[in-house]
Length: 453
Image (tube, rainbow, N blue to C red; front, top):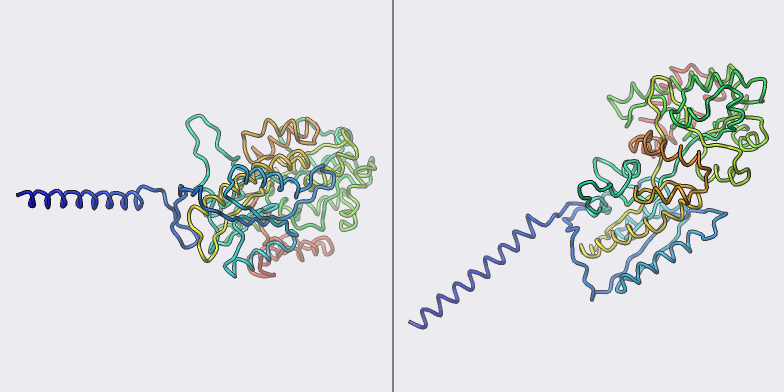
């Protein structure tokens, strides 16, 4: 009897253990929020072992700010030291890479199955889905009434196919730079432009009124393809401009751009030799020979604003009267990769933690040296105190990028496929082609011809 009773107890215990194991397996399989990426199923909540020694490798595209008290390397040194103090069982090594060569180095490392754990882009998104882990599953959650962790303009430019692939850091903006006194002499209500934007017609009227006052009312960087991309974006081009539904809209936007630029040339509003003017536009603005130059990014803007504080003003890119205003703003961020010998979900979680940490720690440096907009709404208030811009430019820039900006539009303007349009963009200024024929040629190069992006 006792033996039979003992056997029954053993069966019950074994059954309980089997049930517990089954429940644990079901919990791990169905309830843990795993996701598929880079060919593996990943648990974003994997436990980091405090007894294990981890090694993380970081590659980052160098950002040079000549006037900054702290350079990029010293900022990273401090950020990495603070991270390893917080995580003493983690060893972090990093390399600052030449931005002109870094992405080729990354592509080669991915092909070899040995990419870094974390990669920092100076600007824009890189995708290598075979080894890249999306950042979005690791983003912090938000409660009711709380701000989202990142600004939509920041995540939008790092999103593909509905997934955010990187930890946003800061937003590179592109605007035009003006002499507000000359704009006022040309009949422009500068404060209204800063608040509501302006159209191509407004710029034409400005050029007409200033023809006798300045040599060239407007000087564009005609040598730069991003100038074309930003004008097309503000001409109402659909985003993304892929066939079949986007081609007609893209071509119409290009026709609008060509007609407007030709009208500017006919009115004597832009220099006869745009390539030379592109190289001398800052000098022309500073010496009063032009009222307006564009486009201008943070580095170029600071070169002027630091030299002549209070004299010049950031203004929005004008748009076609029938198109919405769109502010190009390209985010920088940190990407996470896996190696061919996958090092585990805990290793990936630590790499994500480091990427988030670096994004937050370098954001302030970029804000206070270049005026880049932070990616996090929680730090916008501090940005107004840190950014090296005048009060009107700061107020305008925050409104412009955050409300007129489009994440998809920013990605569209930053796409490397625009390099394919470079020959046609140069030909526009030398040949004065028929707008419709020129637009068709640009579309062909963008969607079919030219070097692969």
